[in-house]
Amino acid sequence: MKKIFLILALILSVLFNACKKADFADAYADPSKISSTTVAKQFAGFVKSNSDYVVPSYWNYFVILRITLDPYNQAIGWANYSNQYIPGAAAITDRWNSYYNFLSQYRELQKVNSQLSAEEQTANRIFMIAATIYLYDHTEKVVDLHGDIPFSKAGMLSTNNGDYSSSYASYDKAEDVYTKMLDDLKGFSDELNSISVPSGVDANFKNQDLINKGDVTLWKKYCNSLRLRMLTRVSASASLQSRATTEIASILSATATYPIVASNDDNIQLKVYNLSSDINATGFRSGLEDWNGNLAGKVMIDHMNTNADPRLRVLFEPGASAGNVYKGLDPLLDASAQNTSINAGEIAIYNRSTTSRNQYFPGQLINAAEVSFIASEYYLNSGDDASAKAWYEKGIKQSIDYYYAIRALSNDNTVASPAAPTVSEISDYLASAGVSWAGAATNAAKLTLIATQKWIHFSVIQPYESWAETRRLDAPAFSFITDNSAVQKTPPYRWLYPASENTYNTTNYESVKSKDNLTTKIFWDVK
Image (tube, rainbow, N blue to C red; front, side, top):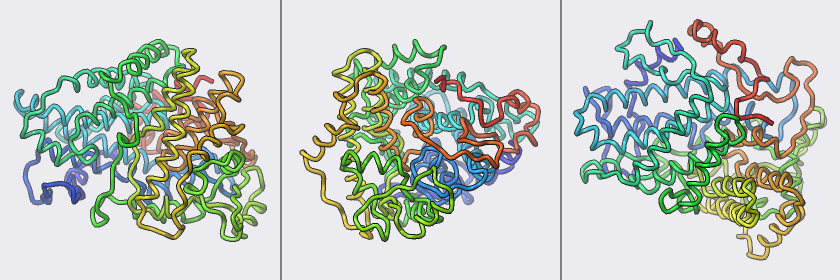
């Protein structure tokens, strides 16, 4: 944590440096030349500070995901190597520090807000609600990687007036962090239905809101959809199972009161408007393509080939020497055989014009297909097979539409834009043996269908969600080569803490030291 605290001064000095967006009315002043800030600008700087972990970026994809979540999720194919199931120290440390820099900016927003009068705090309430929703979205991801984390007392150096001794943060239990987030989000979902935003604040919110451009209805949908995601994540845990069932039912049965992301028009995302701004996906190309980080995996390609998935041609392209044949890399081959296929150009890759070279690729926060699959799982577990089927098929259609819409945003034509799928093609896909709801004989088989479609939809675009969901559901089933040369012989259940925690936050680290291994499951992973 000491490193995080030392960085904070730099964070505060560049707080809004990169908040440029052509669609905004206001320009941002250079923070090194101003002596004060505002809740509105602090909010924009807070959101921007995390943008490289939302909009596809070089660092997140190449340094972190390429050697961790993407292969662990089998969203990509990769050549096997020694110690491949131990997340690299650089990846762990950078992901950890990024989150705590982000959390520190949220604390600074809280500090700025606390210095306002009671009337001003009420007027600016929408900023604090929106910021907290966004914070919780990303806090969930960090909990899902590590388990217990410093949270309730973390990021407080500025709040504590630079007092290091009182700013080393204790760890909160993962289950407690989830409970806190669910409590707050439930309150926000009701508060947003009655909130009154003064006209002056509303105009400012529209200008500073990088995510939903001041649309309160979209923030309601973000809030309730995030609740659905979190409630589903903890739905098998002993202490939260009953709550999850009750609250998911209340949301899905009253979407007029608790609106959700129900169509791709509602998708919550950080859009790219201007490539000359700091919010763009130009780093996606190197991040995904370098060192073969965009190879297709065998399990995904085989499923898409076998069932004639309409997304295949928009999400992947055949290898350079493969003609029109899509082939995925087998994770069970030894590295020599894998490299022979890779070097021969036989292995399919992610469609470059749709993904890595699409500089307008938006950062995904939560989207309609994901919400539909969540609803399908709930109705399946509730015994409402007809509703489960309807939401499942709706999710597939939304996923197909989503990827073709993403391709339409692209400013790259390395791969020609594929023909849009026909109605009959989609119908045939829904009726195929590996996709058909009617063809699944048991609820367990139907849950595997949902899990598989969620996994395909997440692909390399939502790797953090894929990491959590494939572990929670133990589906789809993956096989990995055993790494007999290493202590960790198969993919981990969690990430280690960075070494800096043991070194600098030693006293607090002692409370989680016994859990700091790759085999301790996160509390919601009970299968």
